Amino acid sequence: MDYHILRFDEVASTSAELKKIKAPAGTVAVAKRQTGGYGRSGRQFSSPEDGLYFSVAVAAREIPDKLFVPIHAAVSVHAALSKRIACGIKWPNDIVAQGKKLCGILAEGAEDRVILGVGVNVNTPAEYFATHDLPHAASLMSLTGKRQDAEEIMQDILSELKTAKPDTIEIYRKNCVTLGKDITVLSPGGAYDAVAVDVTKNGELAVMKGDCLIVVNSGEVSIRGSEYI
Image (cartoon, rainbow, N blue to C red; front, side, top):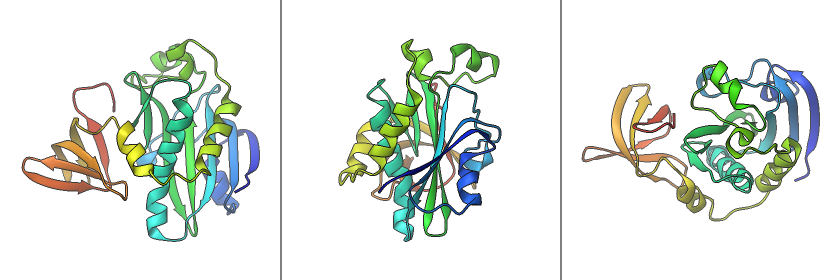
């Protein structure tokens, strides 16, 4: 798949741009700043300058394909960022390092495509997170002390995304920091404590609540007793 890249200085949301123009698969929108970036449940995603904010339209006609896109995306983004820092995947698709969130990924269905939004904290200074009440976030620069090339990172991620990975789930499991942790599942039916034990072939999280095995495929998961959120 070849990519067609649209570049902006500032947009409300790169994903919204792709949805607005009904972008075909392979279209990428990247912006220096977002004024209305968002994550799961419409939660605001802070998008200061010096970050990497892009979205890509991915072909996915069948439901299983659409469910698999976020898992493939997490593995792909992790592969690119792990060249620069030791990091892990927090289920379902946040990238974390040293107890801090480096990257958020959001997948949204759009007819026969999935719009995949990626936001990476690249060169944002540590002071930004301190002054904006973001204690659980960090950037590559704030953790490594080195400025990073955002364009190079995006190209690495796009390259990984179009690379077939037959062992995606195994790679995901190996790098998932959620597994083995005591967690709190914040689900539509209420919160409960459990232990994360596995990731299914469809990317769902299997948890043990007492003696009961539950498969979590929606809602939020927080990891109890750590800095990861």
